[in-house]
Amino acid sequence: MGLLDVVNHLLNFTAPAAFMAVFTAFFARAVLFRKRRLPGFRRLAGISFLAGLLVLVAGLAIFGRDGRMMTYAGMAMACATVPWLAARAWRPG
Image (cartoon, rainbow, N blue to C red; front, side):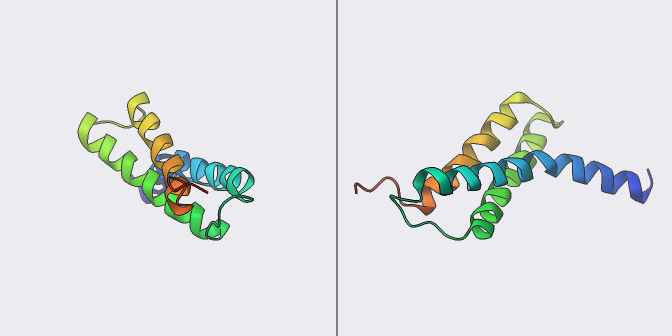
């Protein structure tokens, strides 16, 4: 496998985490903006990306291959939890 193939595989492996990070950061700012104070869009998307990537790597290690639906569900939960924790939404008002 050449260098371009490795780069292509890495980009395709990280693409779902990047998409979910941007998606959740955008909609978290739209939903929680009026009620809670959130970090900046880039910071929120970056932290969500790292959380999603961590779940993807864990899913690869556990299942032995990527692309399992359980891994994608865990990634979606991790990316959605980051804005919730950043906004401290568990606290009332």
